[in-house]
Image 1 (spheres, rainbow, N blue to C red):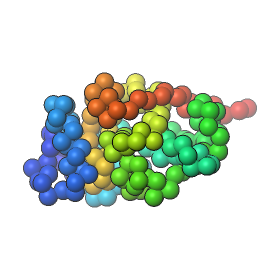
Image 2 (image 1 turned 120 degrees about the vertical axis):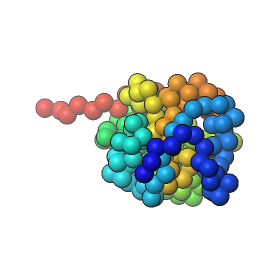
Image 3 (image 1 turned 180 degrees about the vertical axis):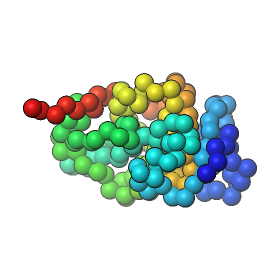
Length: 183
């Protein structure tokens, strides 16, 4: 795995959803670094990629309420545990669970293992609410997939918040997923 600057030389040979990410980043002249790799299906594999990128690849969870009418994309640090009950209380949604692959494809044009904040560019209906753990926002860079899990990108957090999210017509909500063990 090699750290590269910007758009891959073979971008024309890559799948459309990945090319759309590079087009978006280039349209706004945003700097980014990239690592190409074998499919990264687990956070353990992402840990090695994080070392090369110099930015933590966020854990991205695609969630929904019990009725499957409200959808959420949660960005959180890779090493933080996820407790549905605590998140549900903070966002006022009961019975959160993982959304189906069909919903992921429909709203974000993503498949399991490639969930990324950049998939929001495909959510023209604004059906997915972005939720970001405060710890992610405190990092200078964010690591994410370009809508495919064979590459990972390092993007400045300020560029994600101030440029990309407005360009994708999405807002975000901040949560604190800091858990303390009861004694």
